[in-house]
Length: 105
Image (cartoon, rainbow, N blue to C red):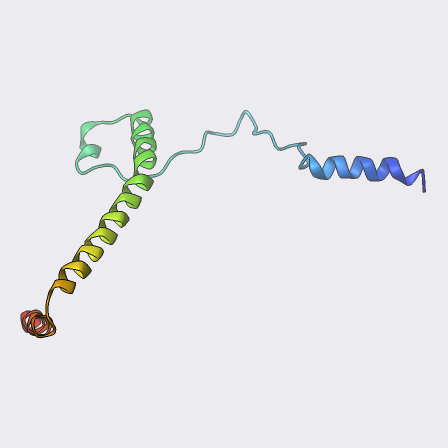
């Protein structure tokens, strides 16, 4: 059993290291291109590929935060509407609903 210990130790070190062999990117691999959508009419102004990539990276940097803020705004508007309707009487709520349904027709 003592002969097995070094093999087990080596195997454990390999597994814990994540098998680092061959995981470095090759120098010949092209850099990963960012993807996105250019703002309206920006394709017409003669951007270089570097400029396009920089624009896509900037968009990626801000889009997640903007999405979170837009979701928060939607949540706040829903809460506001709920609080506003809480001020109304049952008859007022019914009349408002009738008015809103009438607009859809």
